[in-house]
Amino acid sequence: STAYKPLATGVPSAAATTTTAKKEKIVPPSPPLTIRDRERGWTYARVGFLGEGGFARVYEVVDQHGERRAVKVVAKESIRTKKNKTKLWAEIKLHQMLSHPNIVRFDDCFEDDENVYMVLELCDNGSLMDLLRRRKRYTEPEVRYILVQLIAACQYMHQTNVIHRDLKLGNLFLDGKMDVKVGDFGLAALIEKPGDRKKTICGTPNYIAPEVLFDTANGHSFEVDVWSVGVILYTLLIGKPPFQTKDVKAIYKRIKENRYEFPPDKQISDSARDLIMAILNPNPDKRPTLEAILAHTFFHDGPFPPLIPATANDEAPNFS
Ligand code: ADP
Image (cartoon, rainbow, N blue to C red; front, top):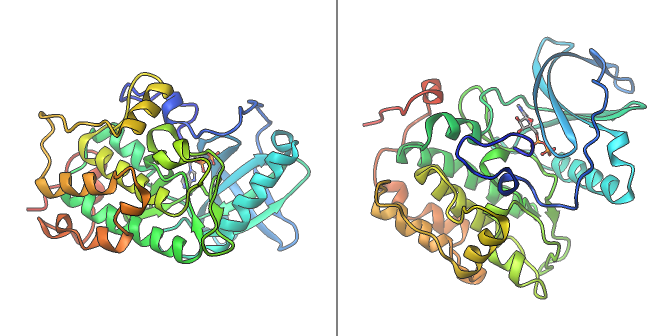
């Protein structure tokens, strides 16, 4: 996530940060240069630093076959409380269950005296947030391409009874081919019985569905991910999240009132606007399903690129 980095878009960093209990920031020593999974006899050579989130630091490594991967390292020192341990085991358990082309692959997990290590697929081109900072906005053809992949990942997660609960640009990664990979299952929840509802208030302020904040008695379910898809769609096309303001309380007020605008200087197509308005329905039961989103005219209303070129990292590609 983007927890400790200031945002170039003028977004207060609190608004881009995953909300959970207050985190103590402990700066642990670096993991060893050669990281070993002793049980399997696998080794990973640490070659670079990729980023950090709430509890984890993420490094680029090369495995014993010369394949590049990412390793997410969590210092045991930082998960001393029972609550934090439970959260990390939940993240590992859920992420390990999932296998889909649009979800960051989970390859290996082990520990030593200092750390817990999660070996993940390397996403070479960073997060969609990194790209938005450089590009300011995405084109509609790119957004079609990205959304189809994001929704495929969501359909798979929901069929597997997993709600991600923290879908946002900083948790959507791009691999070397510029394909989308959903990552960071730190807030994901498993729906164990049909109809089960979740009651924990969690997520990232800009992306939280209204029922998470304001219908705590009834709880929330899979529709919270659909809401986040709507926020992501708006953010990619307009360049900033729909309910963005100076402080978190004001963001929640806007979410409660369903108050967002389409700035006249940031032209988007009528079909894109129509889809955003349909998804950002305050009533979770009236929100479109993932299938209904894919059937929307937005996806047939202009070019659908066969891929996103790597040049998109620096400038808007031309698909016409
Ligand atoms: P946390 O769960 O603590 O928020 P994240 O999973 O969001 O941690 O990772 C923190 C940062 O590490 C990300 O913002 C990103 O820059 C980088 N990162 C995480 N996973 C990968 C990956 N699979 N490939 C490349 N970079 C990654």
